Length: 375
Image (cartoon, rainbow, N blue to C red; front, side, top):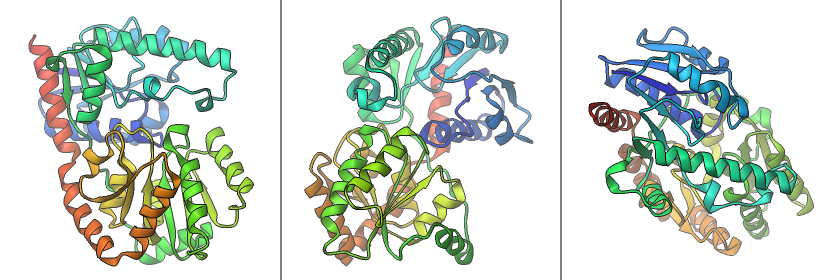
């Protein structure tokens, strides 16, 4: 088979970039008799320099969610002359050649619409949101198959779009190994950031559904009993991240909260070495890759009992109600002070990460490709 894959997110921070790169690299190892045409931006092309010759790189310097995406990507896809196209996110060109499959990572666009999730004027946000919903709906209806990471997302896609089980395939996601740092290298990074001896860690973007404002409120409740404890928030350096910085200052937490903008993989690896707890208290998650990283690093995880997180983390997290800062604080307190609980979470985490691998994701995805092409 010759499969075209929209890999334009490769080389960017966040889950979409990690999914695209992890899947492509695993497919190259899992399916040696197939060719893969990768639509890449320049940053992604650099990530695949010297890669397997069966990974054919096609420059597609086209911004995500843009008019140019709708105008130019169908031509890029047609020139790939593929048996099948895999769009790795819902932003599928309305004129995409067929057949194609699409990965729907979550339905946050529908489940958590809010003008607080944008820098646009409210009227323009509503217009753009309506356009995005149309693109999502058309992508799902025109796709030969819909790929999702978890049973949670499968159930939501099935409910919202009235699809049959025969069209939706759960493939999971995998753990991308962080760089291995020796103690001295990790300490240099930590010292350079000016981090405290012990802190709560949270990674990812600062969109409203991530509930980082709720985490800040929970941290403020913990401060009287843990005066030396810090909070480290690391994520994309954007409007939402800077808004969170301002929120911390307004709440008198500027001295105790450290913001690490746009960390690279080495910095993320170093941040885990001194983290006392990892907190993932999102209202909605389709998977939750950063929390999986923390399990692998041996950091106890406190997570929201919401969306896909219990499915992904299993018994390896201390669960809290994300809408209640007091409950978040109580869960973090338990994870900080109960040594039996900490050791149980660490041991369970090591077992839980074995459930998720890019190799298995690639095998399941390849089975979807074959099923569609055979038709």
